[in-house]
Length: 222
Image 1 (tube, rainbow, N blue to C red):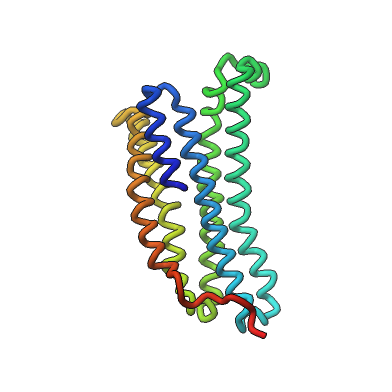
Image 2: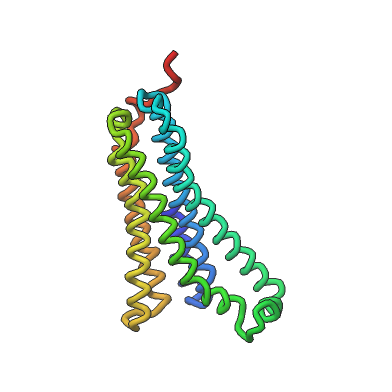
């Protein structure tokens, strides 16, 4: 999904000659929802497996599990909410652009108004993502013996690498744009182009991390 959205971003930029930057950035923002969902799915896998082990008998396991799940869940909710706000703002821009100026009291367009807060949203998402990754790490390190049979190492890095690479790459190109090393259109195009190859490699890694047969439990022991 991430790779397909990055590919769609590459298609948007040349077709619209770099004029519709908002559609291109919104496409990659939507791809970040997949990032959050992949982390949530991985955490749910760990919890589901650990629930049938000896560690789950500890009286602190239940509260600890809920805290770790909440740590990942807040990133999912925040990510989906920020994308929903962006979607609504774009629809307002499409059907009633003057409403943006009326709400803000500025003379800027809806797109310009959104870009004023986008950097803050991106920074908050970074912080939220860090909490989610930390929650997964704490849970994995708390019950290592219970999770060892499913080999969580490559599963975790398969989910974390796409999150980390996309974030670091986007930040590096952001600073390159601010320093006038590259144009904003070129930076966005390069970001999406690299993501297409990176997601392909990570997809191959998932064949190793998630074999078709092996050690997954189909039912709780009776």
